[in-house]
Length: 394
Ligand SMILES: C[S@@+](CC[C@H](N)C(=O)[O-])C[C@H]1O[C@@H](n2cnc3c(N)ncnc32)[C@H](O)[C@@H]1O
Image (cartoon, rainbow, N blue to C red; front, side, top):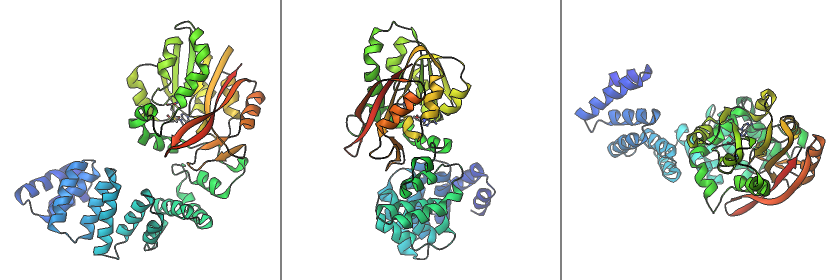
């Protein structure tokens, strides 16, 4: 046991696992052996094995806060949030001074949108856990959801120094909570934020796009607005650029008319899924702004389905795309509609734009607006999310 434990502490997970596996084979009811082995399996992503060992540990020590907490962690990693919450609730019942248990209970309640319970759990934390950036952001969302905007702002302000790479979108959330003017809204989601958001979405993206309920319509809308043009084009005649190509949902209808089809995206996970389809001639992992600044080829057709929603200001992008068009090129893209301002941060921390802002942005950067149509961009919890599909020409 001591050997396994010290191997773990020395960072040698593989050795520690081998030692602990031998131990529980010899003594299947060894509490610490099962507990440590389960916790190690969890750390190394072997979640089903972790569940087995930690359940055994709970059988052996049904009132241990640490065992309940670590079992909760495995449920959380498996996305079983209700089960995780039950474990954390047991952990703090067994030991009401168990801060890590209260923290995890608060985070689980936040995930399940049990805002009041979340705030009650976070109120039990002392320093330093109460200043943990994940806790501050969860507390901020719970405060905002219960109508305490000033308290929410205070939480996010405290989280801001820990969000230098923008992964948690703290600046964007603060702009939303403060009702900031367009010029005070961050220009776009950071690289780290985009990569994190789409890491979770890549696996289910194509199924989400194909779904009837709670679906996202970007690729279909772009296909529709381009439709009449696409049908008159000769097979393999166009150079095509798909900005924020994701898993390549636009690739199906772009491929037949493309002599060259280039996809650009920041998310390695979305690009991996895209690459598996074999539809694109070239896939580039980059921010679309940086890519456009370096690209020297020009294109007949550029599409951007559901990617400008991650940018607050569009003028720079529209100008850069315009600079990469052939003489008679077209650009098709989708956006969320802003209810009031030219640019707003929406409830989901993506950006919305007004029709006037889009029209002015296009004409100001040398585009001719062909069509701007109000559409439903997607449905969320059954609610239509309004937006625009836009077609512009050189
Ligand atoms: C809503 S998804 C749309 C994907 C695809 N166009 C579709 O309609 O299925 C947005 C995509 O834009 C990518 N993205 C977001 N910001 C980006 C940026 N700054 N540069 C490149 N790609 C970006 C994301 O990684 C994601 O794949």
